[in-house]
Length: 247
Ligand code: HPA
Image 1: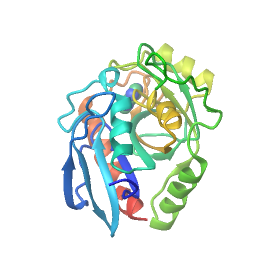
Image 2: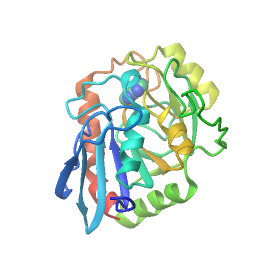
Image 3: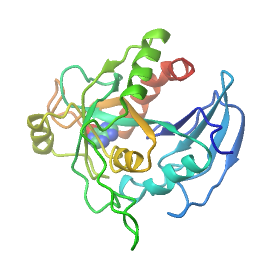
């Protein structure tokens, strides 16, 4: 099946399927890194072959630190994917990134720990030091930004994604620190996925869906973030996604 997939999409919290995929077939590849989070569903979207994988599993059974990021990317690659669009549910930190905003970040900071973050792990494997100054693939980011404009879907072009360990949400002090560091968005799954994709030679971009103001970042500093708010906002913000993906 090598080379037959035009775009692979990894869905995050609240995005467990791509209902628009036609004639989808489920694949269960097992990779040298183990099994991916669930089936990879490959089907047609406007005549193009698209693969979809739910990052946390289709029943959201995997917390961010237990996701086998290497197996997920390797499975998509084995099925023929060369370009990966990561959908990441996030909290917003700075003014332009309020709930229900879609954004295509251009930078990231990694605050995660204890996750396998490289494919240079096994004894004897070649040590690579990939360039990561620009963590997302420029051409794929541009394609996403242009597609959104073409489809009439509002999207913020740019921003810095801060990847935290989770699964708990952050303290207000942690978010204040992330703001000082230059982060606009906070999520738990952006790394090591982006770095691994670069090591594996995959084109990779992030489409962030803002579900809530991060702790203390919104107009009501005492606001409590609930899962229901997160899911409601992801559902509302995702209404333009099929159009954007088609474009
Ligand atoms: N923090 C981290 N990850 C998230 C958040 C958040 O506020 N909202 C959705 N994913």
